[in-house]
Amino acid sequence: MIPLLLTLLAAPYVAAARTDAVPLTSEDQVRELCAALRTPLGPSELDPVQTAAQRQRVDRLRSEAVSRTYRLSVPAKGFTFGRYRPEQQEIELEGSRPLRALDGALSLDLAGINDVAFQASPREVRDWKARKAAGDLSLVVQFRPSGDPCAGKAVAGIFRLSGEPLSWQIETEAGPVAAADEEGAPLEVGPPRIHTMRIERVALDVEQPVFEDARERLVAAQPALDRCAHGVRRTGAMVVAFAVQGGRLRDVQVVMDALRDESVATCVAQALSGAQLRGIDAASGRGTASIALQ
Image (tube, rainbow, N blue to C red; front, side, top):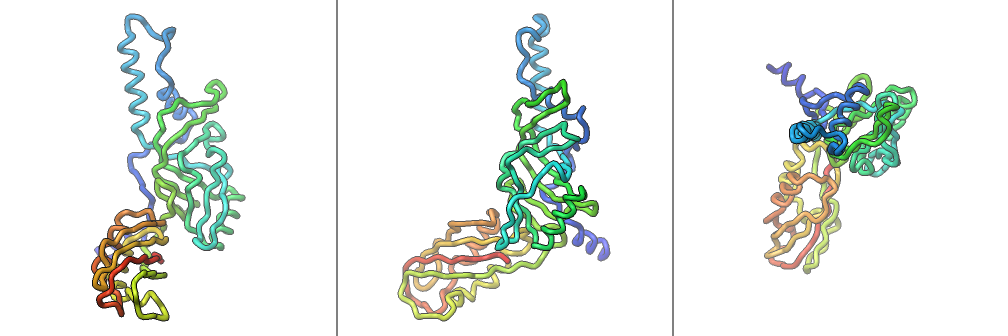
C-alpha cells in the first residue's frame, strides 16, 4: 500500500481533468461538430412531410454537441506566449489570435484567453521557449463549444470554432509542466508543495502601541492561517478587512483575492475571526491585513 500511495502523491496534477473529454484529432470530427452547430434548417432544406422530425434531429445533434467536453492539443506553432510577470513568476498566453490546430484546419477562440497565465521560473520560461521553437511543446485545452455556428470555409476544410474553456495545460513529451484552471488562474503541477500564509501588513485605525513589525500583532493566528494553505495549488495574495472590538477581530471579510479560491478565502476569514491583536486589549475600530500565500 505504501509504494502505491507514494506513486499517487508523486503523480503530476492535471487541472480539471475530465475522463469523458472527446479528443479532437481529425478534420472529419471538426466537420461533424460544426455541422451539428449550424443554424436551424431553412425553408428550402425542409421536407414538408418530415419538418418536425428534421427539426427535432437538428436540435438533438446541437444539444449533444454543446453538452460534450472536448480535448484539443494545440501544437507549438499554434499558440503564442505573452508577457512574463517576474514578480509573480507567471507567463501569460497571447490571446490576440485564435489557437490553431489540426494542420490549420481548426482555429479555436476560447473565452478568457487573455486572462490565462502559468507558473514559471525564468529558467523554465527559457526552456519552454526553446522547446516551443523546436516544436517540442504543446498547449492542451479542454473546452465546451459555445453553441455559436462555426465560421470558415467548410469546402476548403477550414473551420473557426468558439468555446468555453475548462482547463489549460502546457505539455512536453514527458507530460504536463504547467496548468491553469477554467478562469485562467495558474495551478501547480507535480507533487503537492508545502505552503504557508505570510502576514505582509496590518493597518489599524485604533490607538495602539508601536511595533517594529506590525505583523507581530496577529502572530497568534499564524497556525490557523497555515492550515488554510494545505492542498492549495496556486500562490497569490489577499486583503482582509475587519472590525476590532475589545482587541479582537470581528466581521472579517476578504475584500481582494488574487487566489480566486473561495474555499481558501473562507478559511482565512474563519482563522482570523476572534483573533486577539497582540498588545491591544480593549481597543475598538477597524483595520485591514495583507496576506500572501507562499
